[in-house]
Amino acid sequence: MNSINLIGRLTKDPELRYTQSAEPQAVAKFSLAVERNYTKPDGSREVDFFDVIAWRKTAEFISKYFIKGMRVALTGRLQQRRYEHEGKNRSAIEVVAENVYFADGKKVTDNGEPMPDNFDPMSPVEGNDDMPFQ
Image (cartoon, rainbow, N blue to C red; front, side, top):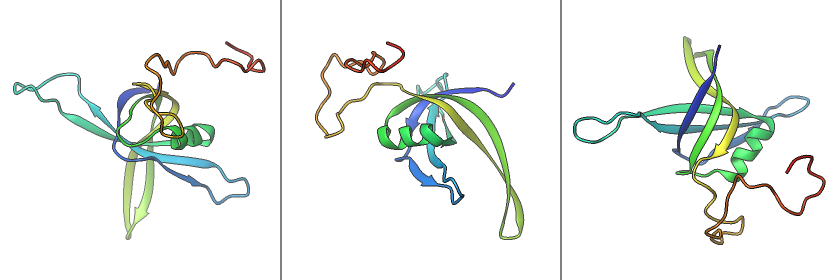
């Protein structure tokens, strides 16, 4: 079984690109800083940095709503990618995000205004009767 769950902060804004194929696919790349769950004797925590990639609608969602410093929760899988660089064989392990969630809520609206104190990003969307769930 290949499954990973992470909660961390984005180290920079996600990069959104599209593949150069007959049917272009959205792909977003970003890095996630994840604190380890134990503290050192001095009270500090070590941090691991994970390269993350997301595809299609998930990639577009991430690029639209997430910015550097935001706390994000995700589920996905690990993937090893092999490639050649300057004549040498290389390998990279990255997280492929399958589900991505706000981990500390959205703080501002799309036009930059502060969100109301009672804003809950997990609450159902009101006023859209076409949605099959609520």
